[in-house]
Length: 285
Image (cartoon, rainbow, N blue to C red; front, side, top):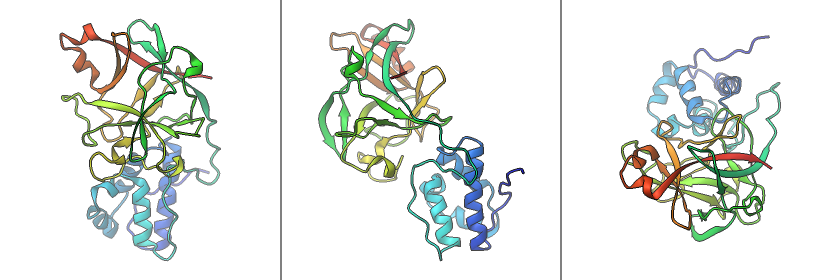
């Protein structure tokens, strides 16, 4: 029997609201978008009409663009007698759907972008620079696999999270910027590779939140996209069209740098003398 997806949501009853939320979840699962809350929110908005459409137009932008917040708002407004559970970043599995894909476990290796030559691994050592429950990653590279932390993730067509296997000290690898949540192609920005630590547990970490600059809102977790060959693409959720590139400096310490629009920086005359473009790859354990 074919799956039925919503053609319109008018907000006429609590039953319609609950059916609509479930239908959006099923549609996202069918399209392999169950991790992409921006896509789900945009899809839901396109199905609204009547009073639901007018209500949606008056919502704050951060609720309009985040399905985790929007589905709660829909049920609070149109089905208030049965408050929903707090939103989670766990994948949504509709009735009758297959189980989640199995976890992959491995390490992040670094290779030269042009030659494919092995350079090293992301180190398991961390700088003791802590704020708001995060700790900056030690960007000194490790040359041996045993000195690199094991990470795990569930394969997806959307950007996903890298949780650390050993959670005794840190929980998750993430990215952080010091400026606003938007990255701009014309203004390369340094991006920190960090590990979330004393803050929320992985199951309750939100991917973004409209709070003051410099806080955990500027830590993004669903940034890792791994293809079938293990190549890693870094995606910044609010600026997915902007390239996030990696390079190492050519001095003895070989530090790893992540920047938005790395190509623009490397076009400067001085950059090729100081830095080598690299790429990140997932190596199964």
